[in-house]
Each structure stands twice: as structure tokens, then as C-alpha cells.
Image 1 (cartoon, rainbow, N blue to C red):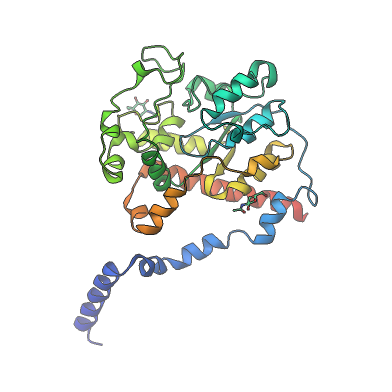
Image 2: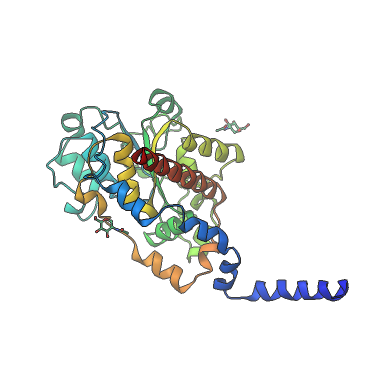
Length: 323
Ligand SMILES: *[C@@H]1O[C@H](CO)[C@@H](O)[C@H](O)[C@H]1NC(C)=O
Ligand SMILES: *[C@@H]1O[C@H](CO)[C@@H](O)[C@H](O)[C@H]1NC(C)=O
């Protein structure tokens, strides 16, 4: 083919691809998603969770500080609380219909039940990491992260979330004592008034929630993240400061990895997610291009670090089984 005609064909092919339905465009990057699917086999998944074939290590007695990014699975509290506290074996977040942690804290006061293994993540559950506690509790931080676009949809669907839980290390007044102190809420109007998902997701306050929390700022604080903060958050997540990083999309495997790393055997209720938002799945099925349209660079960087770390740690556990 003559060079000029070849160029025209290339351009036409590019246009066709740009206009093609998302499925075809996804197929173009198929090798990557195939590699994604192949990172673990079904047999390996089963082995990671099989406590009979490969007993879980004994409880490590290492304290944990849960970094609860909003919309990443309140049910992870079943894992955190049963690991850190002595509770009736069947106690579960699903015993309640809302305010799960508040009810748990009332029924099983941590000072009596948790033997100092559950480091403070109050007064509300979404407490950002302060520099002081980061330095003092290396290795104790545990978290579950979720694909940012899905997390955004879930936050929007859940009353246009504006979560600005504080940490006592934040210098701004009023002091961080009350749960969700309305006086602390900072410019939530833009998020609350968003007419649709896109408008919500275009607010600086909606984006970078997980990254903000990792560097001591409130999830939905209205100021955009600086690039250096985004890098610092990713560095923290990838470091030994975190004892465990799980993925909401790999819930069961995450619960099993938590116990492979920190010890103890998972309880059945750790595998059941409360408040799973089926609407998110439905929305993405109806609008397959939406997931791609919702961009959250800081949290996407974080999620990529989380995914690499998670897979590496799962593979390391499996490699030990093989020996
Ligand atoms: C980011 O840079 C600003 C301005 O130079 C600085 O004040 C801030 O402490 C830095 N934050 C982090 C997490 O490195
Ligand atoms: C997760 O584990 C629970 C309990 O074993 C099981 O019922 C559920 O089907 C599992 N989910 C997935 C996606 O494998």
C-alpha cells in the first residue's frame, strides 16, 4: 500500500475505534485485562482461604488502626473488631440496621473488650491518619480500598456523601471531640446540591478522598489535593506502615489475606458484606462508559498501588504454601 493511502486507512481505523462501542475498545486493551484475570487461579483462591489444608497462623497480637475510607465496606468492621476484641462469636455488623460501629462500641466498649489491640479510629469511623500516629504506630494501619469510580457512585448514591471526619491532630478549630460535629463541616453545599453524578464527581471535594485521609485531611475537604500530597499518600500505602491493604472487589480473598498476615481464623460473618450497594453495579451495567468518564487521579494512583501490593502479598502467602 502506498504510504499516503496507508495513512488514510490508519486515520479511518482510529476514527472507527473512537466511535466503536465500549466493548470493542475494551477488547483493544484485552491483553491487560486477561493478564489481570490470570494473576490467580481458582484453586489458589480456594487455597488462600482453606484453613484446614493450610492452617492460619496464631493471632499475632499486633494492634490495628483501621483506616476506614467511606464506602469501602462497613462490614470490614467484623474483621477488625473480632480480631482486636473479645466478642460473642456471632456478633456482626448485620445485627444492626445503621450506625453499626456506634452500636458495637456501646455494646462492647473497646476499653473493656479490645485489650488495646484496636487503636483509635474515632470519634467517627472515618478518621484521617495524623502524622503523630503514623510515626507512633508503624505497621498497625489496615485498610480496604475500592475502585475510585465505583466508590464515587456509591458516595453519590448515599445521600451525596460529604464526610469530613476529623483527627485530633488537625489544627483547625473546633476541637475534634464530637462525631460529625456540624460546626466542622466545611463547604459541603457544592456536593449536597449536585444535581447528578457527574456534577458531584466534578467537585474537588468529591475526589481524592482516600488519598486525603492518608495524609491527615478529611475525606471530602473542599481543597483539591496537591501533587506532593497524592505522592505522599501513595508512598504511605505502599510502605510497611500499613500491615494490611485489601480490595473491596476481592472481598473474600482480602479477609483471608488479613488473617494470613495478622493471624487468627476468619469467622463466617467476615465474608458477608452489609450494605453492599447493588445500584452501583446496575448503573455501570446500564452506562458502561461512565466508569471511564469518572476520573479521580489521586485515588486511582492509590488504588493501583493497593492492587499491586495486594497481589504481591497474596502471591507471597501462596509461595509459602508450596514450600
Ligand atoms: C506539599 O507541599 C506543600 C507546599 O510546599 C507543603 O506545605 C506540604 O507540607 C507538602 N505536603 C506533603 C504531604 O509533602
Ligand atoms: C465469599 O465467601 C462466602 C462465604 O464462604 C460465600 O458465600 C460467597 O459466595 C463468597 N463470594 C465470592 C464472590 O466468592
